[in-house]
Amino acid sequence: MNTKQVHHKELVIEAGRAERQYWKDLWKYRELFYFLAWRDILVRYKQTVIGLAWALIRPFLTMVVFTVVFGNLAKLPAPAGVPYPILVFAAMLPWQFFSGAMSECSNSLIANSNLISKVYFPRLIVPTSAVIVSFVDFLISGMILLGLMAWYNFVPDWHILTLPLFIVIAFAAAIGIGLWLAALNVEYRDFRYIVPFIVQFGLYISPVGFSSSVVPDQWRLLYSLNPMVSVIDGFRWAILKGNAEIYLPGFALSLGLVVLLFFSGIWYFRRMERTFADVI
Image (cartoon, rainbow, N blue to C red; front, top):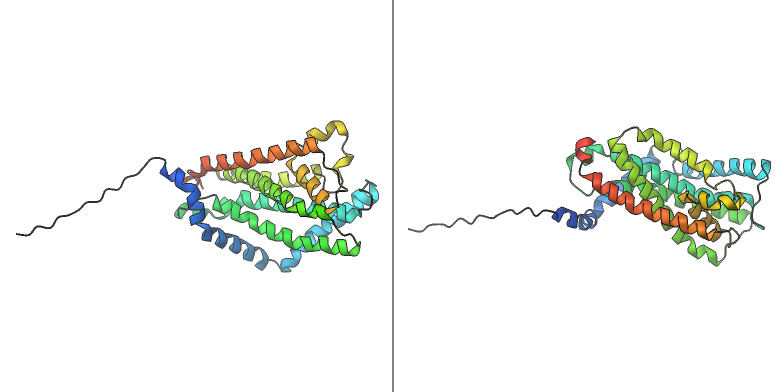
């Protein structure tokens, strides 16, 4: 009599394996990253009456107001040979990207609550994909800067080649703070009201409408605790042919703060990630 042997397979759950696989899963789910980023871009521009023009009008009008207030009324100085509108817009580009990316990142988990509560994937994909929308705005707004340079016959030199470095620093600052706020926003919904205040307050304490050189020397290091000071000064240094000053001690302090925010943001987000599906 023939007997059939039944082979039983054992499922072994190895403690800690999920953590080791997490970063591999980020690459595995890269198509979800592309999908979320592209979806946010389509939603952003399909739901606006004037579409892509909004990404041009908003920074342009802000640049006009800052030029009138700080350049014409307050008579704040600009580097020699640099038109004041270009001075302002060279700072508007990184600030608009940073503030937009931070806001999108902080609200991303709440906006995708249905997806997070039903399907497993590395949650880090959601806030990082939200940053791409602001980067598209950044690229579109760059056309205004090119137009201003053509209008004033202002041609950058080799310093412009360093611009990607400062873009990376802006990315790190936006993602680092955005991850902190995204995780806190899930746990404490009050943070959705705090983020607009941070953006508005940060605009006034950042050297967007003026050069950071107007800050007294004894306060420069303290002022550099604002992580966007190094980014904005770096953008101006790269775009304005080195005519804008970079305060090196302050730049080092600000850069160190950006690195700390970036890695601590990832750490705190990963620490809270396992509770998102239950709390959200």
